[in-house]
Length: 161
Image (cartoon, rainbow, N blue to C red):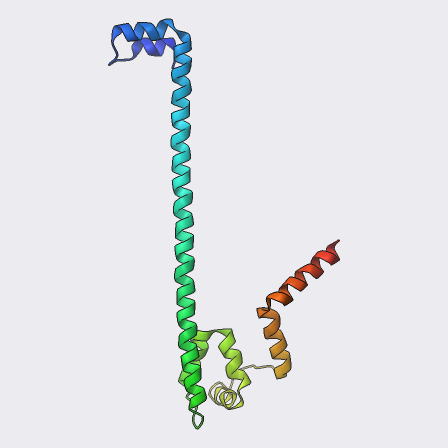
């Protein structure tokens, strides 16, 4: 706002307009507060957007984790049902167990000889490398172990120095 802008402002009494025009310091103070108000509004909008994104991220993570845990419980139930039913393993239940439980239950199914036989009978095109159970166990441990991942990172840090 300048002195000329103050002269053309409507809705203000003539006395107040004359005081503003005659005191340039007052115009500077008004400009300062206008800039501060604009800055505060921008900061409020940015804070609102960041808060919304953060809450969405947290809620999304909780929903996804809940869904994963629910699927793991379903896979656990199906796998236990398969273990109890030793005389006949149903391929459809194996597929469901693998679907809901992911890689962990796929490994459990492939490590069980009777279940592996059912899978091989129903999936003849399956390209399953013949690796030992010990190698599969070690590979699984390396993927899941926190201690192993920490040691691996420490080794990488040591090697980079």
